[in-house]
Image: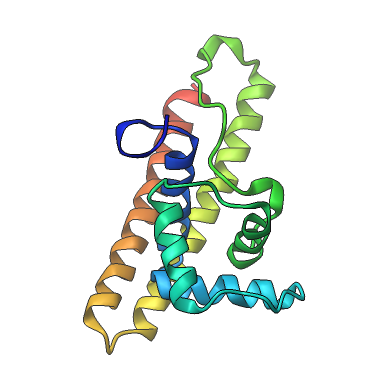
Length: 167
């Protein structure tokens, strides 16, 4: 089940796509331009207009229909991630603390530290973007808000790592 009534894979993917776009302080039209640029860089000259691409992005982010393999590759290129990193995590489950060995806890802490560092880098980029678009107070405020949210997420990871994983 997908769409308004359920939380199926298309809606989950749509939320992930929106989060990725907003993390970069991109509007829908800018994301459309990024996808077109990625397509052209891949040799695809048969791309829809910005307006048509924007409609697709809104549809995908709303969970209405899946993203084809073609556009998954363009998204990965535009977002600067590998194709295997595209999409939300498939398995979300809690692992009891006593299940991990000390080495396992250290490994998880190291991975979360990398994620935290990435969030902090993204926050800095959003803050820099806010300064670039300072002439547009709405966009600047949105970028600053996104930077703040990313920084808070990094702080939560710090608290989780120090409070539970290494305890």
